[in-house]
Length: 243
Image 1 (cartoon, rainbow, N blue to C red):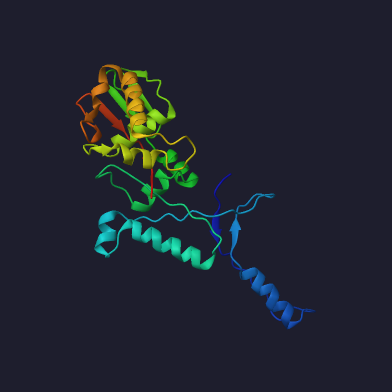
Image 2: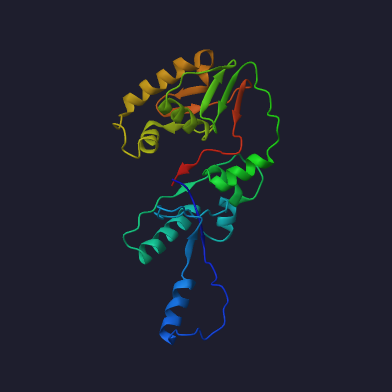
């Protein structure tokens, strides 16, 4: 599966009237030529939807008197009015404060737009920063954790749990919020709050000597605390969260 570009192609210019064509035929041909169609669609494929990247941060939205969730709901309502049977899914792209760059390009990279990724690879510096020899490296874009240079054997869900806390650094997250977000798709059996404690214990055991970066706030939940020996790598594709 891949993304293509929506584009309205202009019909080639040609003299009118066309010989041996009625006015109705000309109108039908013109209407067909003017219809928007999708470029670069390989033979044997069909369009099943589209992605609309909106570059606007929370401050810009607030300045205009709206919030990002309000914008999302407004777009969803518009789609529902035009095509009642259409399904929609929205995700917000997260990036570190002060990361810079155009908002829409940050969104395209975060949501893995193929063209944006290809452009970024072409312009990226050839040499990567050396990996730290010690401490914890939480690589959000590659979805892996390194402990003193060795990759920690975290499961997908364990990394998602750690990432969830990292993206909310310094804030205590209640167990109910973790369940509601990480198990929102219903793909796995939804755990209870006691089961979350088991997930956290397993995560901590794999963090070894650095287990205290995930703190228990008694009676409240869990919190990620960054230490001096913790590095978070966002690279060019910070992980999106779902609205």
